[in-house]
Length: 490
Image 1 (cartoon, rainbow, N blue to C red):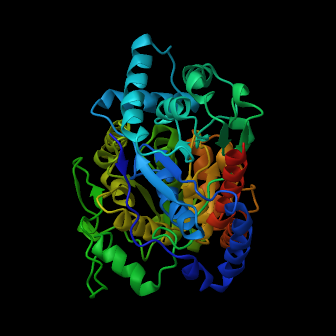
Image 2: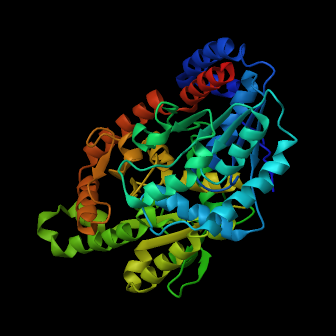
Image 3: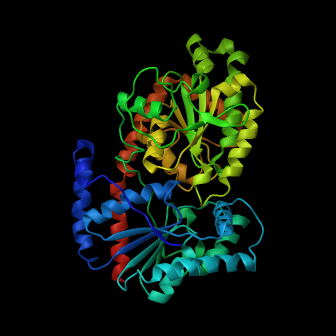
């Protein structure tokens, strides 16, 4: 089931140029695009992925598509679908195994399922793709469909893989063995790091880093009044005073001690505007390291009475009022991630086993996905209320949640997963933890960052600068036009 994705009210290049810090970047991108697009006239680009909601790919594509269109590259974005939910269970397994997690061989029935859904979607899209068009297929879910269209239509086809692992494990070898016949059909593949390129694609693959859109709802600047309006209308803070109405369709929901979810402003709220906040906002995925971070926060809170003589009065107070926010999308709204519900249930069980005082200091938040705009504004506001933004991933292909925190002048702590290492240099733009499953080590590093405020501020400034120089969408657009021009020329 192919569905076209509508992009509503995207930022224009003039909107970016209105900001002095971005105008030179836009001007440079436009100049490069003029020469590259002259050799792409008459072609249309088809972007294909598995979902328009949830995850970094779905967040990157709208503005990438919008900018390509404005520059003069006709671009369509469609998602695949199926009435076979077991297909997404299979592709989630492939996703995890490419990250080195999971085991067991793939069966003939697995391959038959993958090929059947791929053929269904290929048949539906085939009549829309012209002989001069270009396919760009994102991640393993639509990979099989794209390989069929490549073989039947002969159009240029690019595989954009956003996931990977920087070590050789039986799990990722097995996953790539399953996908190899489909991936080999493509003219070119693009990965987020050289370590992710499988051997059989060496020589026919390149690197493009994911990028951040500084004017997206998730990353745009928020004035104090707009910030408090978002928090109030999302029910993330109480509204004793009137706030700017934003008419959110749904509110954020916070886990309660009885295992149910309710408005996050009940029972005194989280204290986002008043307390130091440590946050991690990601998909509900075991590879994101939520549970070790939860355990680390419990350990961190215990340091205050155990090591009171070592800490200043100010830092003891800071630890006393400190709170942890773990947030992610409503798992019912992310069709291609059937594991999310299980992970949230596991975290729910761990939370409900904690003493009430610790439950008060930890907020597990389910963010609505009915509106991408509303969800993005809630994430933006939560990140801007955070003293430290964490991405404790066991595996991370890139991690735009890290980029987002860096852009917002937050102190960021991440694991040494390959994608995070590409963004953060330890002690320069943030801090890196050696073992994301070491709760004691996580607690010690978080305590160090909280206590040393001047260093936190320096890391935050450096982080923003690095994103401005390396990881904004304008660099990504330029690189994509270069790849498209080269592949179309072949």
